[in-house]
Image (tube, rainbow, N blue to C red; front, top):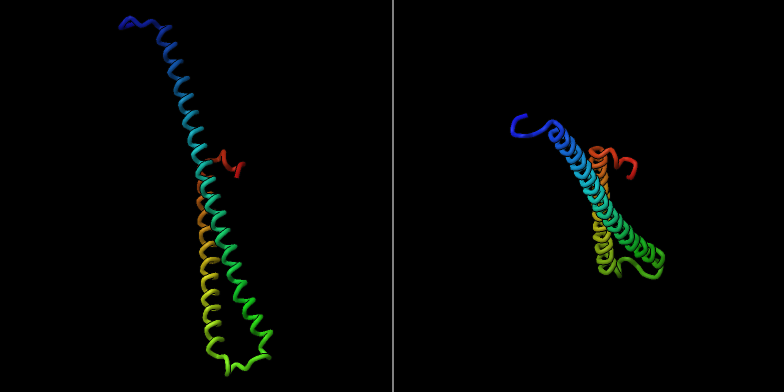
Amino acid sequence: MPFGFTEASLSGSLVYHCIQTIETKHIMSTQTDILSINQIQLLLSEKRTALSVMRTGIAILALPLSIFSALIATSKMYTISDVWLPLALVSGVNLSLLAFSAYLIIHSLQRMRHYDCRIAAIKQNHPALKNLV
C-alpha cells in the first residue's frame, strides 16, 4: 500500500465515511421534512386568517340585509317621497357594505384556494407528509 496505509485502515475509514454520509443524508432529509412541516403550518395559519376574513365579510353582509328588512317593516309609517334623501343615503351605504363584503368573501376564497394548491405541492414533493396533512 502506498503512503503507509494498510488495507484495514482504508476499509475502516471507508466504512466510517459511508456511515457519516448516510447519517448526513438522513439529517438533511429530516431537516427538509421539518422545514416542509413548518411551511405547511405557516400556510395553514394563513388559511385560518383567510377564513377569519371570510367570516368578517359574512358578518358585514348581514348588516345591510337587516337594515333593509327594518326599512321594509316600517315602510307603512312613512312615504318614500318625503324621505327619499335619507333613504337614498342609507341605500348607498348599504350597497357599499354589500360590495365590501363581497370583496372580502371573494378575496378570502381565492387566498384559500391558493394556500390549498401550495400545500398540495409541498405534499407532492415530500411523500412522508401525505399521511400527516
